[in-house]
Image (tube, rainbow, N blue to C red; front, side):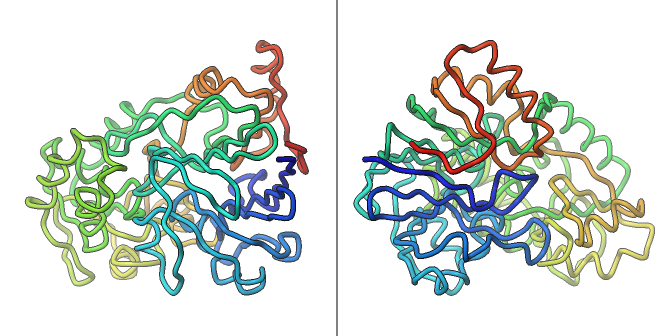
Amino acid sequence: MNATLNAVSGLGPKEPAAFVVEAGSRRLLLDCGEGPEPGRVPDVERIGHIDAVVLSHGHNDHAGALRLLERMGQPQLFATAPVLSRLKGVTGHAIPIRGRCEIAGIAVETGANGHAPGGVWMRLAVGDGLLYMGDYSFESRLYVFDPPPPTPTMIFDNSYGDAEEAIEPQQRRILDILARGPALLPVPPDGRGPELAMVLLEAGLDIAIDEQVRSVAIMLTQAARESARPESVPRLERLIRNARRLDADAEPQGTMVSHGGSGDAGVAGALIKRWQDKPEPIILFTGHVASGTTGRRLVESGRALFQRWNVHPRASDNLALIDSVRPRRIIPAFGDSKYAAFWQSRMAQRQGCEVLTTTPVVL
């Protein structure tokens, strides 16, 4: 089936994800995100009328702009059951975490992305074939990653650009920070939150988690079990049993892992309001803190610390993925354009693989 791909949003640095695929008379939108900066959404006029929206996972920068569906002709929404269960105010059709389905007459293959509960990559049977990775990770101790099949055109997660640091030294530095005293770690609950709490509990720390993090941990042992590495399920069950409960009235104690990755929402947001003008506890961010957020303000002022915990692929991970998928064309997404030269130089060593940094693309 002849098709074209247009990146409405997602090829710039940390833009919300929104990729339109046109195949015959059908038009699909892959992801519909908001952020990371508050209120930043894709241009609906460029998206136009859509037959179906398909979500790779439920994080805000991939699923946070679903309120715009009405302006796209009220398309049907497709996502895995764990993702649909956490969306508010919308309903949709479930697709498999690992399997095959048909969306608006287009055959779609999915596999677990190693990044989030219910998160998937998608291979669409359009043109010669399009693989949309969304966000993914090889390094997660919690989430399973399914290798995708060979595909001629691939959109991949370039969030970390040419970064190569592995997760182990990052975790050691985090443990060194947490040894200094009580600490609050704001996290996305349906991402690094349960994993971070699980690993830190196993390191011997006194862990408290809020209900959002706890509910996702429970989901990963039940409805979203396909997203979890089999060996991680009993580790999560131990976390669920042993972690103390954390709420907005808590006093600083131990290591507190809480919903509110930017510092503006959830229990983490409430606790930060109480503690931001005090020297303690430690406030430690481990993921992207966008401009305009409380997290960015606190890190820049020195009140909060930042230490990355990898949840996206390193450059070598992406190179390994390219070797496995053997695409003829790659499209780096979600990373700064300054890394285009890096990918151009690496692909110069691989004959027959072109780096595309603009769309539309005929598939």
